[in-house]
Length: 381
Image 1 (tube, rainbow, N blue to C red):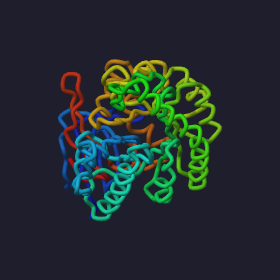
Image 2 (cartoon, rainbow, N blue to C red):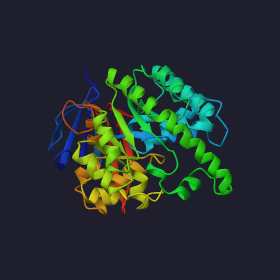
Image 3 (spheres, rainbow, N blue to C red):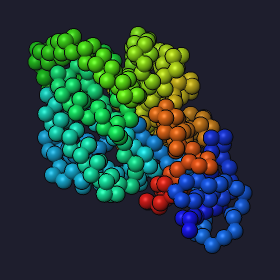
């Protein structure tokens, strides 16, 4: 006997637009979208006119690290409960597929980051094996290419079956995200240092960049290409950054900081990821380009919640309500588009044969609220 139910009296956001009717789910997959309910003895859920959208797909969130390290220098003793807290935040935000983005390297924090990396991957493996997770958790490794310990952290995990994305980062002050040195000091809480003290830190970071960045970048790229792991650049600022990424076979440009970089990314076929918090706050916390402005110019493919899971749905809806994208195009930035760029062809759209990863959404005033979530046809929220 098949496991079947229907969602009726709903507005379904499909790749072509919004369709009203009834969706049938059978054995964890979308079976049919029709104007009326089929006859039969099975559960029918009245959605009272709410929207049904595909479950959100998150490519870059470091929210997990906040649960593992709730205070500076504090690693939470139970890795399973830390992961469970993270998973709950995702599901309640409508996110059914997540690439947990964990850092490989961060200079003086490398020892702590190394511990969190190992704990995170172990917790995800164990929890998946025991069926404890509601979202589908995959892995994204964020590689700080200047860090002297990046390869020590990356190599043990390069063959993880859940590794679906690797990004190449360089947070050296004075370039990319931190062209503005004052923003660098603010972000890393270094404002109280004297110019001499900060100068010594900056000189050391520039030295490590000169020594390590190109060597480690090329080795990581080689390892990923050999395993068909997609690669992303990070904080592209100049056309040269994008040319380099394209020539190296990267497929995504994460958080470009200027219009010029985003234009070049589009020209060369790289997917453009921007932060949903940037959309919600109507500006970058680092003083870089507005995600809304890129969307208006057709220079945005994917949103990422980055550090606030609830921002993903909200940001996508604001692309519709305040930027002017059609609703199905706005929601595609958090569903169909990330699935496409990662080759996750079993999810991301409401179409027959796709996984029944779905979220029921009510619009309260101008805010989208998650009412229910299904993962592979199972009600998980």
